[in-house]
Length: 139
Image 1: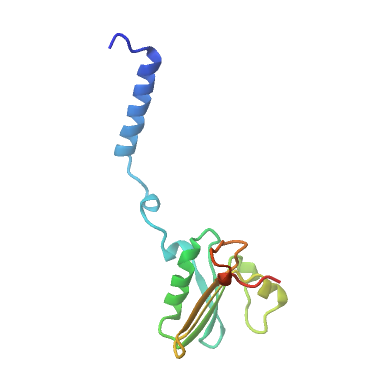
Image 2: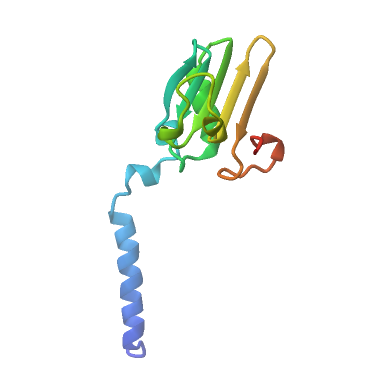
């Protein structure tokens, strides 16, 4: 123990303190939990009857959650189309949509239970996808 230099003692104390802090300090719920659909802070408004919806979401949401959120909102509807925006000021209020509202769509989910068709598309400039076929068309 006499051969240990002062800086080695400081390093041992620092590492020991760090370990104890991580053991003792409780982690926040956000750090412990996996991302959930509530993290998206999704809000929906009907654009046309009970089948087409505008959805706003937090732009920092895990994009893999978006289809789950839309599917949950569509529930048991036979046909459902969810158009997603990240800026609430740019969300369409109804049809026809303006060119700007159309350009600002960042996500789309479509399900037609009578044909078995289900599709999710993302704005790949924001949320990269491995398959380009999953990207919304860009003007």
